[in-house]
Length: 65
Image (cartoon, rainbow, N blue to C red; front, side):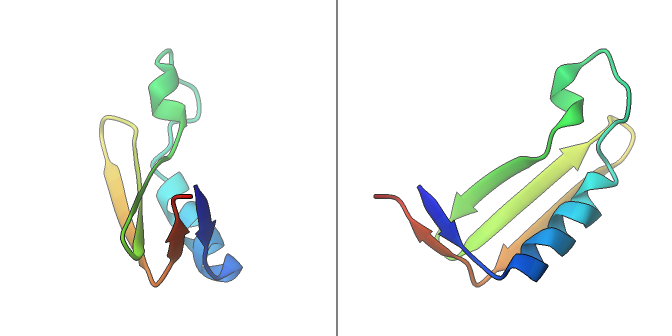
């Protein structure tokens, strides 16, 4: 899968969602950002079990080939 989008928009989205990523945690799943590519948008999600952030980045081009 290939994803094309503006670099600045993706960087801003990752920085905003990264606020919710736990710094030190015994659960490895909490130290990552989940990305879901769907049609013309990219959904980024993160949580530290107290707060969660979901950010939708519109206008991306996704090539599943």
